[in-house]
Image (cartoon, rainbow over all chains, first blue to last red; front, side, top):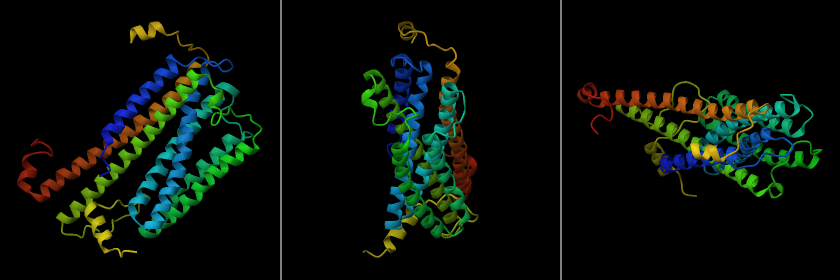
Length: 257
Length: 70
């Protein structure tokens, strides 16, 4: 179910990543002010954009979960937020490396863009502990979705607020690609597509793995004579993926509204 | 590849080189860690499927591994 199109997506990602690296190192010219250090821009900025978009998408998927009460939307929201958090960590790390090379410091506390991104990252770092703190799977998924919607709405607001108030110390990218030379703009866009594809592929892998595991568990229960929809033992932050048979049974029992 | 490298100017791997390399290594490490995690998970699923095969039909389970009949 989730594995459909995974091969094509993986191949596209590898091609896009290879093209992006080739363009970054063999095509894009050196920037006049920062020189070779500016090459970090082609990985750091797409990571940040994809990560922030992932948080917003996680919120939208959570809205869908709250509307339909279908646990598959909760699973998608969980996986997207989980992956955005990993991409967010990579953004902070690559940003720190750039800051050390450019400013001579790993971190600068009076830079609004850096601090605001850290706030968003720390906000989402509480998502998994929140899930883990709630034992009942139904309540866990509902509370997590409310969190994802609220935090997802905070992300663009935070982005706009920082852009409106900043003293323009941080290098600007979004909205100013038209100011970049054509070769740099093309390289940046290809890098953005490559990172977005990487994000989508990893999410799809994660969803496929979780779904397969759920199916194996359901099969094990069926073979050992237990009910396939019986709750799992032990607490987990991850939503319990529904095997196809259990989903079918659930949907069949739901009243038509 | 050799031709491509000959056509392109030498990469200025001086002071900034280590930072740029560091940033790209972070991305590479992230992907590699993920692949490692996925391979562990795949191994676990394969083991579980082997156990299930044994549960469903002990004779088949003992005689071969999953996917051997392909």
